[in-house]
Length: 171
Length: 130
Image (cartoon, rainbow over all chains, first blue to last red):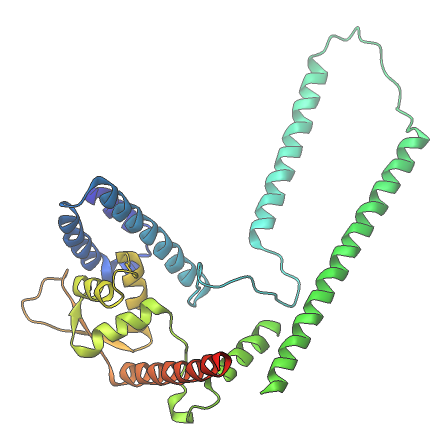
C-alpha cells in the first residue's frame, strides 16, 4: 500500500512534492502502523480516505499551478457568472469530432471505391419537400426551446440579484 | 457580479458588529483549517500530531487525510499564517509547524466572529422560545 501511496504522490506538482513528499510519506507510514491493529473495515476506510485525499489534493494543486491561484475544487457550490465562457476542452472535443467526420468520409470513399463497377450509377438525389419542411420546423422548435431556457435563467438571475439587494438593504 | 455581491452581503452580515481591526481576510475559515490553527495555537506540532489533535478536539468527527492536511498547511504557509520550525537533527519527514503572529491574530479574529455569532444565535433562539 505504501508503494501505491508513493505512486499517487507523483500526481502532485514537483515543487509541492519537494516540499511535502517526505513528510506525507512519514505521516502516512505512522497512520498505517497505527491502523494495523484495527479491523479490515476500518483499515479499508482509512485507505479509501487517504487515496481520495491525495487525489483531491493533487487535482487542487495542479489547478493552482495551471491557474496561478487557489481553487477550491470541492468546497464551493454552483456559481453564476457573467459573460460568455468557452472552455478550452470544447475546442479539443470539436477537433476530435471534426477528425472523426474526416475519417468517416475517407472510409466511405474507400468503401465506394471497393464496390464492383457493375452497380448502376445513381443520379443526384432530389430533396423531398416534406424533408425541408421538417428540418425548418425542427430548427424552429430548438430555437424556441433555447429562448425559453434563456428567459428562465435571466429571470432567476434577476430574482437572485433583487434578493441580495433586499438582504443588503435590511441591514 | 452576482457572486461578488452575494459574498460581500454574506460577509458583511456576519461581521458588521465587529471592530475593524478584528476583520481580516479570509474569513470565515473552514472547520478543518480552524482546527489545525487551534491545534497549533498551544504549541508547535508535527503533521501526525496535528492530525491526532484535530481528531481529538472534534471528538472523532473530523478525521483528515494526509492529502487534506498538507493541502491546508501549504495554503497556510503561503499566506504566512504558520511557519516551519527549523529543528536540528530532525529528519525531513518530521517538520514542526507553529502559528505566526499574523496567523494568531487571524485566529483570534475568527474566534471573536464565532463568539459574536454564538451570542447572537443564543439571543435569537431564546427570543423565539419565550
